[in-house]
Length: 342
Image (cartoon, rainbow, N blue to C red; front, side, top):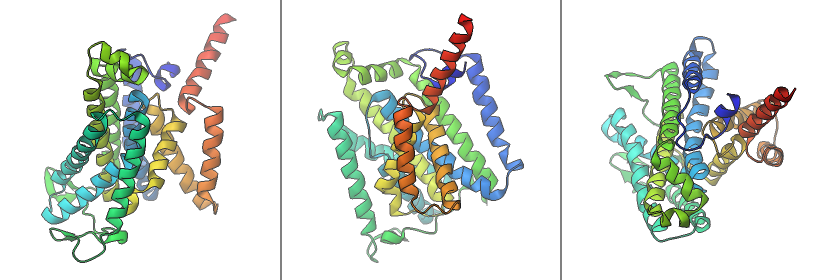
């Protein structure tokens, strides 16, 4: 059972009853955390779960389709800025969340169309997404003048937009989400996206994505338009990243050019590599674990946190080439087989 949780089931394999039990129990335990933890812990954990959403977008795209994209932070930043600008101009936060989901999806559809239908190889696709991310970051940083206004909102260049509106309860717009409520919302979104992607990958669509990852040419010879599948997956991943960006801006509360930064793009890759890109739950654990490690190292007075994280990445990649959770599953499976032989 442990192996099945941590590893990738063959596409089309329906989850067993214990999988639903595991997900439901974990979600319930997380939702009850505000009753037992200090407020500052809840606030920190909220950011970890928001980053887990971003990690899921990369895991879906890289682990199951084979596309390494540096553009997830571009969509992350677009989601954050999209929510902030629309919410400040209209005062409507629920609609702004949907806009933060739609804007990165539209942008990823436009960029992805020219890359994928242009038959650009996956390596050059990674380079182009890197360039797009750099352009967006530099462009946002250059909006410091009074002329850079959208509606009534100044973009403020490198200083970002510090007045991000808090999310209001949809059925009672006079009430804002509390810290505890926003934490629970982050948990619900993370679980829903995880389960949604898991179910999607069990369909014919998911099987085709994995087939494209393994051999795109052979998949096309079987009659599937690989470009259509790749573009749709690219758009889905962009939307998830945008949703994560909107939640992060609300959590901040700040929409800042660093949301587009390459530092965050590198973080996402590290989360997925360490957790295991051939899983969905692995990158969730990777994002939470690495972000917690960052905070813990900071509290211990470690001056070179990026250097330490680089060493951690090297060690984990060398020791756990498939990622921590898949490797753990393999160890458990080997131990069980050894016990059975006795």
